[in-house]
Image 1: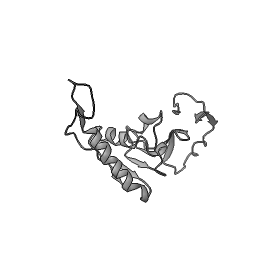
Image 2 (image 1 turned 60 degrees about the horizontal axis):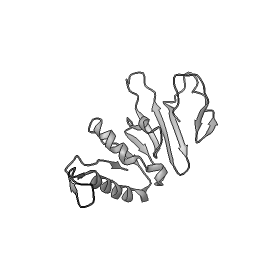
Image 3 (image 1 turned 120 degrees about the vertical axis):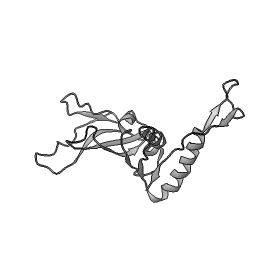
Image 4 (image 1 turned 180 degrees about the vertical axis):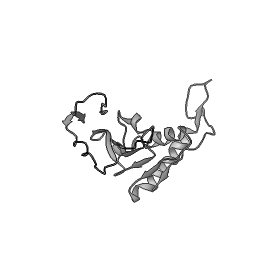
Length: 161
């Protein structure tokens, strides 16, 4: 559930359980990251959004740990770096939507760090998602597989490391 920054209640919920986050770093601390949001439900989705602290940045840069389909998905859109712990669907389910949204926000390509054995499969899935995204439907007929036509669009761009 979204971390509500507008109230001083330190109790947050994740997967229906209350937890109390670690206290903020002490004054003078060298910590440059803060927990922005965290949502996880086993088998459904997981996403942790960290935000870099900077007094100069208007929009603070974010980094995401896992990117499953979660209610906090919108909070991940400005993150140019996504770390994937493993390739289960509840940890990568929103990766391709993120790549599309991130590139539409300025033509940038996000970087996704994934386990080595998952990279070829994620790249294949990216190609499949790109092919699906290129399909268009003839509005004059009911949409069936025979009325779909390929439509040239900007390809889905992702960088896997």
